[in-house]
Image (cartoon, rainbow over all chains, first blue to last red; front, side, top):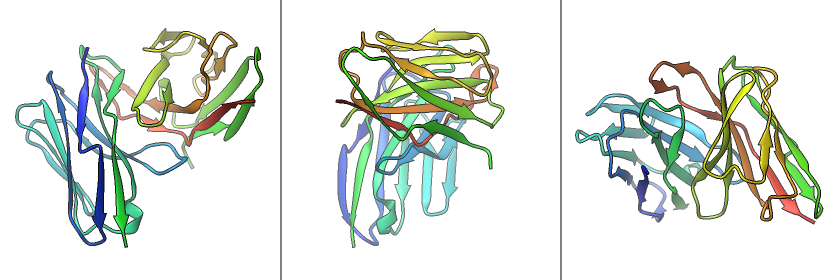
Length: 112
Length: 115
């Protein structure tokens, strides 16, 4: 079945640094979603991508839908302590399914 | 404000007991979902429903049951058959837009533990 591989699994950075993470799949996706989860809470949608090559920003966050449609990237600029959390990528399971498949997440720690 | 409400926030289950987790949404979304989250793992789909009075098994449905009698509500029952129920349970909902799923929006979760 479809699987999403997220890299890296965890990151430890200093406040003010930029962050890059990615998500790859062995099959084509027609939608990419990026979520952030704070401890003890539900994931919150950050950015949704619907077209290959699309580049979308949400404040200091920028996400890109890879040209091959098998990958997506999330960048965070000038990180701040509240960026701490787990970032998940997700995409539809295929065949027009309403079901999503999720990556295992990238855990971000920001040192002040 | 529109959103998804899960209750309770924390729940404890005794051996052999069934427990029910509540999920209510006022977003007028057609589809609702239940996920289980374990440490270090992604979200795994338990059940989902795209329309009232209909639901489908996800990847890990064994030991769980659901109902969808109203559009706004999608309760999950963790039965005694689920031998490892300790986890963080997340409910989500989305619009249904033809071939492509609308982004899913999540509640704040219920943490279930065994007494």
